[in-house]
Amino acid sequence: MEELATLADLPTRYLGELEKSNLVPLWPSLRNVLPPHQPMPQTVTTTWYFKDIKPLLLEAGELTPIEKAERRVLVLANPGHGLENMKASSVIYLGMQLLLPKEWAPSHRHTPNAVRLIVEGEGAYTTVDGQKCMMEHGDLILTPSGLWHEHGHDGDDPVIWLDVLDLPLMYYMEASYVEGGDLQNVNSAGHAHYYGKGIAATPYFIRENSAYPMMRYAWKDTQKVLHDLAQDSQYQGPIQVSYINPETGKDCQNIIGYSALMVRPNETVKLPSRSVAQVFHIIDGQINIKIDDQNFQLNKADTSCAACFSHIDLINTSDHACYIFIADEAPLQRKLGVYSVRERHAF
Ligand code: GTQ
Image (tube, rainbow, N blue to C red):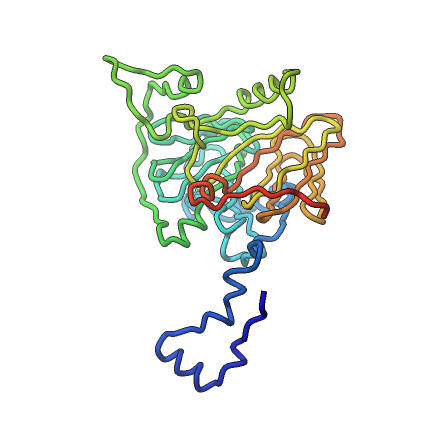
């Protein structure tokens, strides 16, 4: 492709006149906004180690009372986007949230979709749209766009979880806002978990259609499915599952996709090169993650992110299975018709 003229090739007088009329020449920026062959992501490969996060998060628990924080979160920010912009990728926000025993993070609802992946601690819960969801290690809890949610903690030790939101996208779209609310009434019934088993409440044969029939994906259920797949001699390929809406079979949320992967001892999983940024969070175990030409040794609760079209290998040299939670931008890109997968060539 031809190299194009730059701003410096234009007379200052001309540039001044353009500016006065709110005009900009395209050609000096054309190759930036439309780079040849593949995007030029600002997202850079980044790893956040839990051993670095945890003491600082616990200190935040001493420095800032929950009433003064509303949500006590340290944001996992990608330096490629500028730390102050609080993005892991252009679409994905990540935060580690701390709730201390007896604390309560009040009810609110917002346009961005959120999920929580529980990292450690027991006795906390999130109430989503009247459904009380207990938080246990590895559980995935959805708080979809527009639904009330609040967090409480009846246990004895600090609880920490990973928040994943599509906040950067919502903010970019100028669609991000929040409303505060009152303490929710908890629905005593909470039948929702039967959806996962193919059973729904239908009083007088009336079936309520819900966009989000299932809020909590218990880790013990997910882990069992992963182990069953690994035991199945007919099954080929990586031991990988997606978190789906049991009503529709589609992605559980509209914008960010969620999956879990088990890498067995001495197994290497080479992921396809895809057009989406991705986040890897270790639920349990240890793994070496190779992202393009960088290598990271990840332990439980560590988190990495990789830009679009990265070449990613997951190498388990330990003698225990490693369980990885993955968030990616595939649901959004598929809806927009820009999702693609490429052949991997040697890096
Ligand atoms: O727990 O509702 O990390 O509203 C950022 C914004 C968590 C939450 C975050 C939020 C929440």
